Image 1: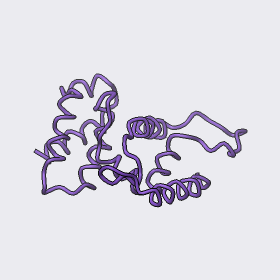
Image 2: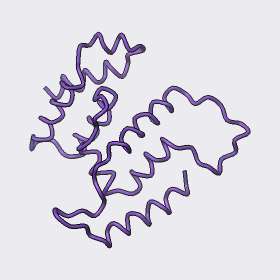
Image 3: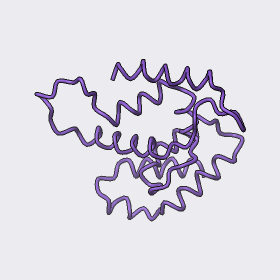
Image 4: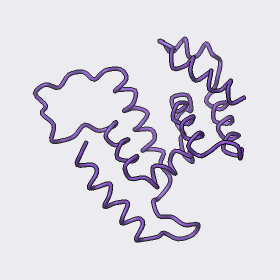
Length: 149
């Protein structure tokens, strides 16, 4: 089933129009259910699940909370900043040469924005408490890294 899902995502990635994507016949509910099933499996790593979530994000509809990829965002400040950089243009950029961004850049920005909007994890959370040192370290790292966007 994982190979079929991956193949379906490959076909969707090659689609040129919304009608072509709709023609595949998958609903956001079905995609979400399949990803839920993947999360319950023990033979797939978090990384493998997160990659599939990222690829399927355009199909998931509006509710993108509780994804494995959010765990990575809360654990890895560099990954979080990479997403920020995909979504937001740096304020200090030279605006004189601004052009309309390429479709791929727009798509990454939209997907990244949805990831940020759906992030429901707080860095440093341990079951019922927050590791303050870890949270503050994550915040400091994000602040430092965002300067390189």
